[in-house]
Image 1 (cartoon, rainbow, N blue to C red):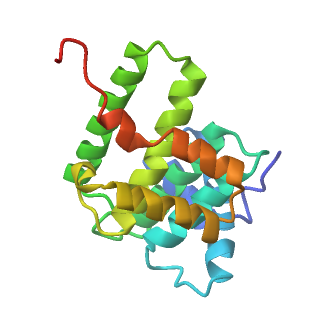
Image 2: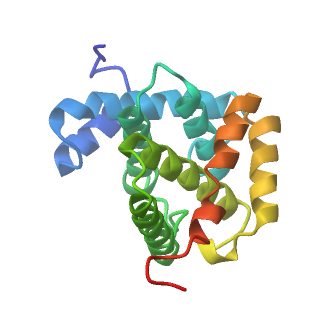
Amino acid sequence: MVYDNQTVLPEFQRFLLNRKLVPENQVPFHAHWVSRFLRFATGRDISLVEYHEGTVIEFLDKLRMDEKILDWQHRQAEHALRLYYFHYLGISGAPTAQGVQTDIQGTLKEMRHLIRLKHYSYSTERTYLQWAERFFAYTFQAGKKRTSDTTAEDFRNFLSHLALRQNVSSSTQNQAFKRNPLSLQACPRQGDG
């Protein structure tokens, strides 16, 4: 797929190039993802110059559910939105403070360790961690600032959110349920008990 460098957010593209924030060959793709998000947000009557975490999560979830969009493209879209809002537009107060991001990354690292102790396949590990990231993004949006604050009730609410807001199928809900990050956090470590 070829993107026209001149028409898709040219000022944002120049910004990325001048500051060397992404490789030159990826600049048009970053502009493409931001452009898609802006159309998405416009359809929801959201201000385009203010960061709305809920709308970003909804957009990224929609991308994640699209079978044509690969995992790396989803990550690229998320990176593009962060660059656009927090670097290009200069919006302060990123949605995830450093402490929260560290807490989530620490929890995901622990989950990865526990999954590997169980000798699960790489694809299973990746699926579990993706569901955990979605769950933590949802709980952060709901006001939970630490992963240790999450409860089974939060997970039930997340499943309801998937069904009612994201219109996911029952099989997808079952997949999320089976990859419940709360159950992995409770797994005993080797050497415990």
